[in-house]
Image (cartoon, rainbow, N blue to C red):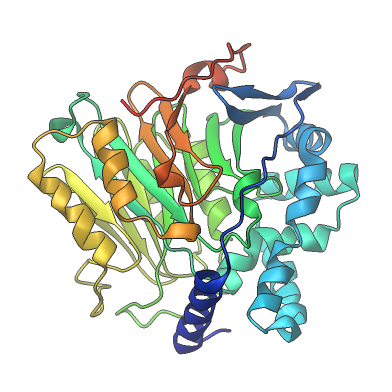
Amino acid sequence: MVSPRSMVRHLVLLSLVFGVLPARAEEAFRYPEGKYEKGWLRYVNGLPVLSVRGSPQDIGRQEANLISRSARQLISYPKNLLELLGKRDQWPKLLEKSRALASQFPPDHLKELEAFAATTGVDRDLLLVANTMTDVYRGGFGCSSLIVEPGRSATGGPLFGRNLDFFTLGVIHKYTLVVACRPQGKHAFVSIGFPGLFGCLSGMNDAGLALAVHEVFFSRDGAAMFNPKGTPYTLCFRRILEECTTVEEAEKLLRSMERTTLLNLAVCDRRRGGVLEMTPKTVVFRPAEDGICVCTNHFCSEALATLAFSVRYARLMKSKAIEKLDVADVAKKLHEVNQGRMTMHTMVFQPAPLVLHLAFGSCPSSALPLKRLELAPVFEAKTLKTTNSSSNE
């Protein structure tokens, strides 16, 4: 297991590497549109949307037939990241721990992964590593979120803005994919991620419950950085979207699950927002203050906080000075805390009308216009009208 001190050294190294690499023009990437069984992939307002539905095996086959070529491009990312860090020798240990975590996958999620592997011939082990590496080997997600509750929102409903910050290796941000999943007997949800990722880093369900993960590296409760008995965290969060409708239900479900590591989970429903600060030992809910909630990469609750300071956190807290914020205000605040080439996704969720505003394609994504996606018809898997407008209003 990587120690916090060692991890800081790795992050400094990566920052230096990415700071001195010359800027290169972004190469355009476009998923091929298509249809398979009840699944389809098409562009809606310029955003690639993959719609899948049915049993775990159905979903796995639909994904395999629509995005397998792209997934093959990305499953080498974990090994490439280790090589960049000079830690290629740790691959066998990472693979061993990922195989062990497979027994903690929610059964339906494992069936989906295995159906994908069987259909495509992609190595199951590589898929396991791609879906568990961030539990085992903390690579340094940055990330920032700003939640605006209804009383502080110019729209009358909550707003939930989020930057996803991570080392792209110049590749993974180009493969951003909006996955609209309707599992049999569960809530439909969208996950903003990548092909081959079966869990959720950022997403919202058909009840208007939205969430986004932020890594944390230090905790007061003395919890281990890695709990090998935990459920991989992206799958925990997918379960929340599949099974819950409110912040309260999300907290209850999270407490019931074994957790692998230290994280902040920003959560928002149609009424309120907050942060679930979690370790393998502890879960604390931190509510919004004066209708505003900010989340970065450190704990703030009395039970878990250590001496930590985040410039991004302080900047986002200045949002309290704005009486009413709209989508454009949230987007502006997210741009103020972007981390350059690490900021690959910028998004604003509107839980009440079920709308997603998303920017990606070059880094920082916060410098790009947000594109609006109406999620109600996506959740119903209806035929969607393709448009090309952007929206950050």
